[in-house]
Length: 333
Image (cartoon, rainbow, N blue to C red; front, side, top):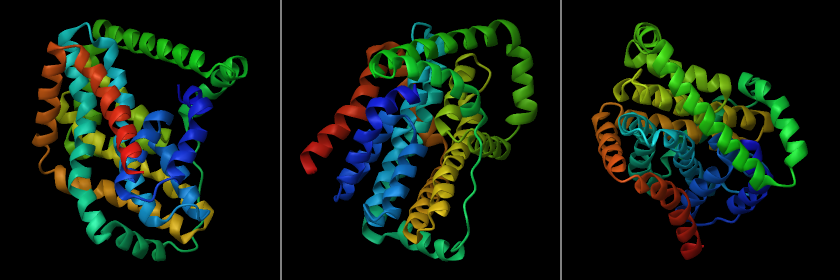
């Protein structure tokens, strides 16, 4: 799916990101660009590269980074849709998907005004950059990308001229995979898996948080790691309370890609922007981890509402990730 949207979306995302000079426009460009290319890691890496090349300022980059955090939630929200006809499962899955959304919305709601008025993320990130000055970057091999690359290569070679057809095929495969995954979990391993998750991976909030960081660093995609939890929640294996700290860890883990990219560039400004992404997520965790009941409550209530009216989830995805950002960009840019 990522390969298909990049065939017709990445150049547009590059142009879009480079066109901002207004912080509010930058925020919504981050949302739209990440929704298009389905990866906050890609968006932040593009932003880091543009800052390193002088095409984008630090002040212009930070709001885009914030928007990218919201835009990346679209993937796990889509991952909940295959269960839409099974109300009980969908309610659990959609709540697990949108708790990530609400955490990011609430974080931006508090941190964005502070950033615009004080530039605290830029200031602290600049101080951190001086500590890491001269440090070279490393590259991690994502096992997920290594496994899927040969198949993706075959399909893009044969259908590369038809990105829409490739995207439809990817969505069909995604929905079928999630359907079989949920079915398998329910019929074969729910009891054993639940005990295993409770005993080891999600025994407490700290462990779930660390697992979220580790898995996201390993696969270099918070979209993958947070989406993985959606069918598990739908199957009743994990509760929303246990998924929330894992989601916070995934948000920290996803900053690694841009940080490595920035260190490789050797640009002080690029490293500053990458650190601002990390600090934004840390700031959000400091604010909302002690108040976890708020995003969890909002996600549960929204899932209840979406279960009663099945058009709401689809409308939410279209309006929140595309209609509103496009409208704001058009009005203010």
